[in-house]
Length: 408
Image 1: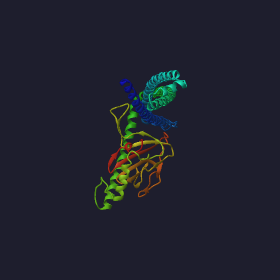
Image 2: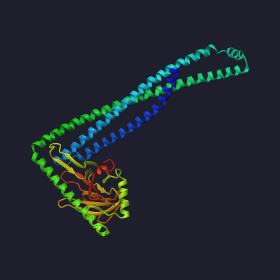
Image 3: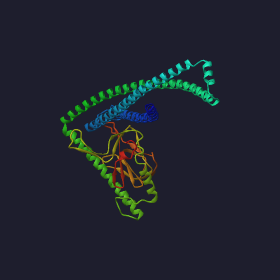
């Protein structure tokens, strides 16, 4: 009796908990599928924007960076697909255990139902039921016997319904199992194709590395030139920020600081709103990919050489335009000698900078709203690339745009 009660309690707990677990896994699977689709889309964008056919190839440094980015994204795609496959495997195992449990329950129900049918058959005659009632010692006992007969009939009907329900559950779980196994096979097949492409890209990277080693001087010269250009742009950006801070503070008459804005109540509100949108700000272009991230990273070929990016580089389509990531005021126009142009926008005490523009649509002092067009992004006539360099500061402190822009 105790064993039977324990069995019933365990069954009730499993009935309550299993749907919750299934829901959690479904949510996790949806999140992984969304991530996998995003990575697949990113690979397509990398192929379209960084590996498109051009009249002339980009320099060897750009080729190396583009190839490295595609390899990294493809490796991440393989990792996510493996996670999906493992999750499906766990779900399949749960279904197998549930099917086994349902079969046991169904067996017990059918045995009980068979016993009920047998007893019912033995006592099926109307005279037997009538004699059972008339043989009662008193009216109360006859009434209780009538109740028992009604309950017995209901129990028999309930057993039949339970068998039907359990059978339907078993059919549904078997169908789910077939679907899950097909989904797992599809994921594994896709992963094999992705791995095949990855191995090809690694071989291409090795070939490129060999060609670079044969002309080390050209490679290091390209790095030095790129770093020199970046430093020149960043010095100009920080110079203009300090100048804007000093000018604004002089007008306010409250400070002579060149490193921190004195905020008016209105500017403080804009700054607070900007800060509240951290991680949710729009991209400074309508569509594109991050071709180079923020920070310091080692060179793939010569680990002793460090690359530094104080912002992010976004590669986009020819003819694309830069747009404001938030409301604000244009505080400066950049014009680096020998380079392209840029725009700086103040959002309270936050400054966003959009560099590598060929044509501007705003001027210093203009108020801009979110998504307002700032200028055309320059397309390199030698390699056909269209890249926006985006920087973010709080006063004179550099910020990582990847922490602020949505999914950057």
